[in-house]
Length: 420
Length: 116
Ligand SMILES: Cc1cc2nc3c(=O)[nH]c(=O)nc-3n(C[C@H](O)[C@H](O)[C@H](O)COP(=O)(O)OP(=O)(O)OC[C@H]3O[C@@H](n4cnc5c(N)ncnc54)[C@H](O)[C@@H]3O)c2cc1C
Ligand code: SF4
Image (tube, rainbow over all chains, first blue to last red; front, side, top):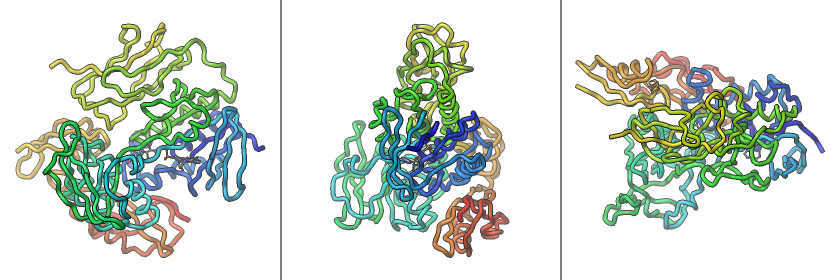
């Protein structure tokens, strides 16, 4: 059986950044496993601009951002195997994989970094009545078809869901000569970034229909059109508001979920809110020596945050391999309070924190002029006011080590609304 | 006249309030950094965008491409057409020039991935 100090599952931005960081910490025996035929993960299909502003201070496209990391992986001579699918990870870190080159194989690792990314919510889970004719795709699938295979799936398009991938695809399909009739969003606000509404919809005069949804699909074998209706405050379609849009393509952009089938079989404890592993401040999961970073941990909107987080996972995995002492003391829980959906990490060994600890989270709604506050046992540790907090933007705060001195009770992160 | 814009300079998407006189921005508020002010000024007088698309190589492989700088907004479709019409054969290296002057804008279009 081949043995490695560190096996990284997934060769996207998270896996690459983690492997590079571990290597730079002196871990030499590393293997990156990637099921695709190249490194880079989802970035390969994200040919638009907007990556790397934080990391490189310039605006890169997804493939450019990915290539900076894959070049570094090659420069450092970190071994990676492509076309290799990981099928199973056991509690004692035996990893079963299958590849065309080597067939089925089991390898053993001292430490594992989970970096499998996320996948799109499948269309079956969306509950639109009617048949499932040809012409219905998830937005990410369409993105891959257009950008990586050079195939444009249709000429007349309706997009359900206003997440960033849907917005980006509205522009992309338009530039490829298709007519995008509308982007339909159930909620009264878009879950995508404002800049994408401006430069992907407004620039091309594509209407964004908020508080609307697709209520029916026409066409048995091939999609012929969709019926769109307004919804009330309870998200129930309002009778009599149906409007018919002829189209040959319906793209679904309805959110992403961390890809954690493997984590589950390994017995890693998952958070019911994020769908990703529960981790402590070192990004270690409930299994010792198994770390997680990137979209497998929680869905990020900025790849820069993915890279930064993954560096920490790589450094901590390297430390574990070198035999770092196990975390001292008992951990405190980090929990979401009012206005906060979840926090990563969800537990914290205060004494292990070096300079400071990042806490990342998302809010449950739109808050204007509100403050983020962090308390423990009635004591306020941190407060920051913001102009606007929105669910589509992951928030990141750093609790300095000094602040954590003497913290023994659970830490709560919450939003305090502005007094009217 | 007052116009409300959203800065597209970065994912923050600052809400900008612009005072416009004779088709020029005379003051900009709401921006967090200088990019927002510059964006507002050009958006009022002559909007520009960076463009990304793909070109199919002779071998039938899509290569991602971007304009090396911003181009006038009304030229987006012409620029895409020029890029699509370019004759490209493998291998392509990141940064290779695909079109040297896209649709007469004076801006080049370059490959954003190495494809061997
Ligand atoms: C469609 C889409 C559009 C996006 N647009 C933007 C944007 O405009 N700007 C921005 O900053 N961010 C954007 N993001 C977010 C950003 O790209 C992601 O946050 C980032 O790619 C996540 O990196 P990752 O390495 O965690 O996951 P991924 O990039 O998904 O990489 C995971 C890798 O793991 C591999 N893998 C999974 N399971 C296995 C297995 N069992 N065996 C072997 N390999 C496996 C996959 O093949 C993949 O290569 C977008 C994300 C998506 C999904
Ligand atoms: S003004 Fe600056 S911070 Fe605000 S969106 Fe524009 S570039 Fe980003």
